[in-house]
Length: 345
Image 1: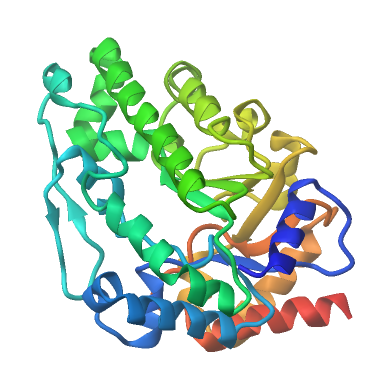
Image 2: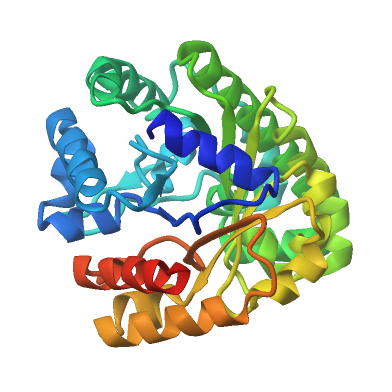
């Protein structure tokens, strides 16, 4: 992202009052290949295609900050592959990781990977480093170390049903799995910072923490999340969780999070009341039902409704309640921007 965009993010994360209403969307490998009409495998395997597609999106929407910016990722296969997960690749979709263990009694088989050598992680670093001169030559910089969250990764390694059952039936084994994954995430974030010195933020995505009750959140999720967001000295600690749970929002400040992307089912005022005044909020137009499936007119109308509902715009980044999904057209993204600009005027 541009340094001016990073400056905006830092100010929003500090809940400073902004002269404009900044707009930011999370874009990744499901949306970008769809939007450009290219094969998903080409996006994953060709540096030139990856760079050109990301650059095309940036140049097409100059009023939008795209997060995290030139994201070198292979979907959920990115980090699970380092643990030995078999990745199934699809021509028109994101890769699907297989389990590494089938029962939590096998947790001792899970070993912390070497982030510099294992799975797809070296490919991620190589892509960023190989393209760094081109990216910076266009006036953009890698500002975030990214990671999938500990629950997201752990649930893929053992299976989602087994993971949720394990929280209740095998708490010690489940906690051990989470701890191993957390140690890996911290190593991975620190390695990115070591290799790419422009990084000043942490970008974590974990939807699975939104499926559990508050007691389990405090016991199993809160401690690792606190460790992860303290991995490096960071100006922006971003967490994405668009599940229909208010529980994580209660603990954002304790986790060290200062920018939160949440589900569209919660309005900004409700989320502000729960999260407190020190956490910036990114949201919250319905991503699928409106941004992707709605008409341009519906996007504009719903965006205006969203803006009308916000009591205070300090610490607010306007977006959708999640990641931009396939189906979200240029027309609809431009309609969102148009609505915001007209609202400001």
